[in-house]
Length: 192
Image (cartoon, rainbow, N blue to C red):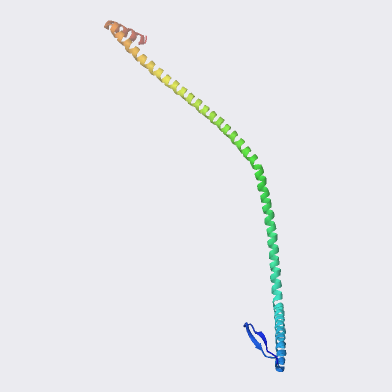
C-alpha cells in the first residue's frame, strides 16, 4: 500500500493530503501543464501585437515629440551658453571696474579737494570784491554827506555872519549914516 503524500495546497498555507496519482490524474496534469504554457504564449502574442500597434501608431508622433524636445534642449543649451558667456563678460567688466575703482575714488577725492580749494578762493575773491564795493560806496556816501554838511554849514555860517553883520550895522550905523548910504547907492544906480 502506498501512503498519500502531504503537499501544500495552493497559496492557502494549508497542508493537504494528496492521493496517489491515477491515470486520469496524469492526463489532467498534462492538460494543466499545457494550459499555462498556452496562456503564456497567448499573453506574449497579445503583448507583441499591442506593442506593434503602439509602435506603428506612436512612432511618428513620438519621433516628432523627441525631435522637438531635442531641438528645445539644444536651444536651451545654446541660450544657456550665451547667457553664461554674457554673465562672464559682465563679471569681467565688474572685476575691471572694481580694479579701477580705487583709482577713480582717488581721482574723485583729488578733484573734490581741488574744487573745494577753488571754491574757497572764489569765495574769498568775491567776498573781497564785495567788501571793496561796500567800502567804495561808503566813501562816496560819506563824501556826499560831507559836501552836504559843508554846504549846510557854509549856509548856516553865512546866515549867522549876515545876522551878526546886520546887528553890528544896526548897532553902529545911525539914521543919518543910513540916509547917506542910500543916497550914494541911488547916485551909483542912476544913469548919468
